[in-house]
Amino acid sequence: MQFTIRGQQIEVTDALKDYVDKKLSRLDKYFDAPPTSEGHVTLSVVRGLHTVEVTIPLTGVVLRAEDRSDDMYASIDAVVDKLERQIRKHKTKLNRKIRQEGGLKTLVADNGAALTGQTAVEQAEYDEDDYEVVRTKRFTMKPMDVEEAILQMNMVGHNFFVFSNIDTQEVNVVYKRDDGKYGLIERD
Image (cartoon, helix red, strand yellow):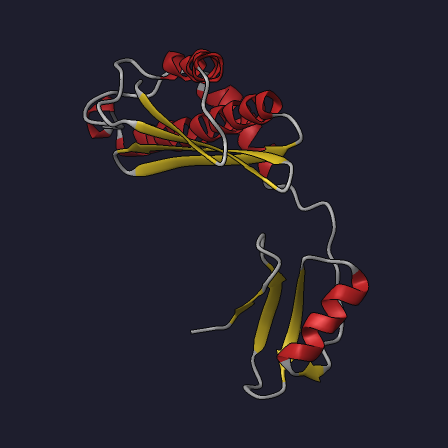
């Protein structure tokens, strides 16, 4: 698969390009034929954190992964691992669809290139681990305005806070964005 590699606030050296190409070539084993679409890789450094974003458009699905760390090479490794997990998960869904719909003719996963990889049993075991709820938390929601919710979120040290909006009488979520500002999620 071909990738467009670009840098933001970082010079993309030949060594870095070679490392990205080498690591992303691990994904080729999941495709019977090379996908016809081109993937995009963005390398950046913001406030000392090395960020790698990879987007791979396929027919019916877009694979995207991002990682930040103190080391660019570690971020690249982590992104490739995340993409492999996504591909395996997508493969499991496709295998289920094939079994339910009765054949391979219904499967087209990128202009005719079918994903290959682990067996359906291995995939099913993998998917069960992905969505395990390890903790449930219950709390009473005191009605408050957005500013008070942001203060509460900062006091407890979380990056999001669920609250009952006193103005709309709806459940909302405030969250801290990567740029240091805040976001509000409301029901439509």
